[in-house]
Length: 96
Image 1 (cartoon, rainbow, N blue to C red):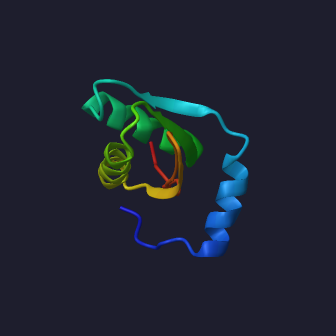
Image 2 (cartoon, rainbow, N blue to C red):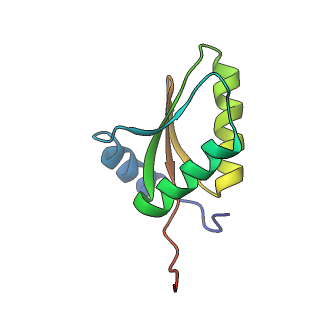
Image 3 (cartoon, rainbow, N blue to C red):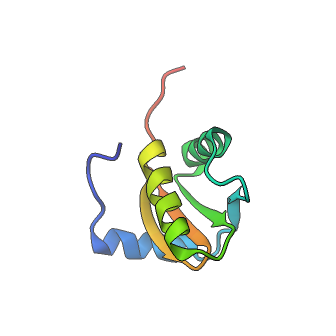
């Protein structure tokens, strides 16, 4: 989990960076599965800042998916516009 929350200035900078990004994770009719969580985590490890596309027209379902995905991956929700989520998780230093 992210221990230090981002301030509004940092979030604005991340929103600006995310504007040019394309969705790298797509959540379809099966909803939030373990495979989606794994793929999201893998992309956050690689890029720190990603966009996720959530299908469906139910806004409350998309909000609950966003909260569950952030909780499962330790990411922070930067922005939620329509069906697009912008997630951020600071890279951790791994020794492999």
